[in-house]
Image 1 (tube, rainbow, N blue to C red):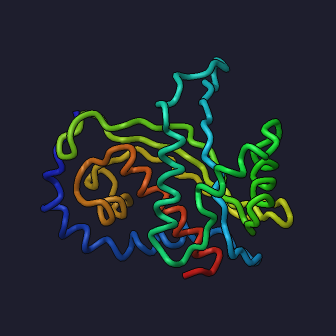
Image 2: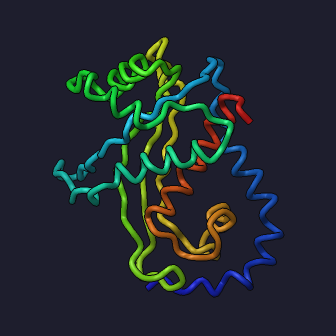
Image 3: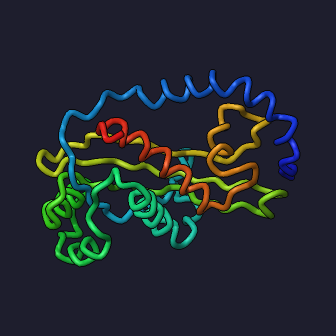
Length: 217
């Protein structure tokens, strides 16, 4: 049973005292990869695809992802891009009209490049979702927390090379259990998130990093 977030008030003093140190650690993690030296002015978003996990010990496919998980991640990417004037991206309707013309037999990376050429984009965001588990219970008294895992990559349409890749692979924890998760509560508040809300936080975090690498800030 995941306890209520009653720890928030007594943890505020500790959070204030540690946030500077944790923020520095978080920034260093996000800046490990070098800046992207290629100019990417217009981005297309290829719909996120499902990646059904396989048990490493048995080689068998695990239970399927929740239906629609890939659509949730895709929708959150568009939502985050649209929330800031920093990004220039191809409208989702234009992408959907171009997709039927793309050879569906190719690999994910080759299909992403073909989509970019079809819509005139400089770069294409593509990726997969491998875990999408919603919380069980309410926002202040969940029995099980939300847990999501997805990977996003940015491909250069001109060269076909992947310029950037990041993975969000998290199960929400209470702040008292792990102070390094302070950013979740800073952005979303002291509560247990739904999988959709947790996905939004993950997309924001990854695209913040991409924006930094592209020098858009």
